[in-house]
Image 1 (cartoon, one colour):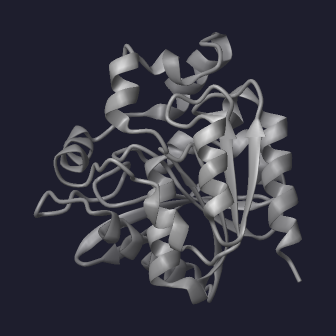
Image 2 (cartoon, rainbow, N blue to C red; image 1 turned 180 degrees about the vertical axis):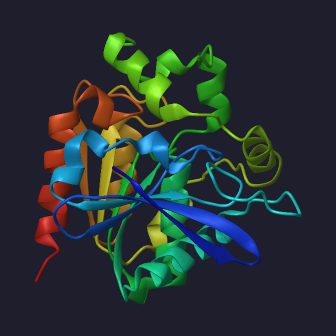
Length: 248
């Protein structure tokens, strides 16, 4: 059963969902922007090895809407540090998915001393306009196979996206190279690409990883944008192996 923690940040009530389990804490940032932490489910069973803290950042999930209706990546990173403080931890391992990977990257760049390791998956290394031009933009296109398992996952975990957050991102922060900040990271990073992810692609993601300072790159075959749904056991094992290697 998830335990809901409410904290106040800049006058907003933010919700973090802590998935109870065995092992060290992994703070998890969903994609979107505009999705709550429920989007991540239990990351393919990773909660059996890690204590997952699934974040609802400002304007998403059970968290308050920001008064100015602005959602910068820097704002989200600020929220993430407040969640770290509420957890009483000096350093955290952070997982970020898609847009959440951009938030996790920003956080690690702003506070490198507070991040022990990064797990970044489904990083948008391709221009979003290119992806949308090729896609029918239906949710099924983001799974390797839109079978009963994927449909059930969507029904149980995707919830409702806050369209205003996504629209703000499109109007204010979408760029030709969203992944460029990853090149400045010094934090040990696991970069994951699903072999069928429309936002990634093995060649451009590998090229990005090769330019990064301290990066391990893994392709999960047969997985798309949500690798922990398409290949849950592989995803959980890959992430746990990397994080365990970060422990002194």
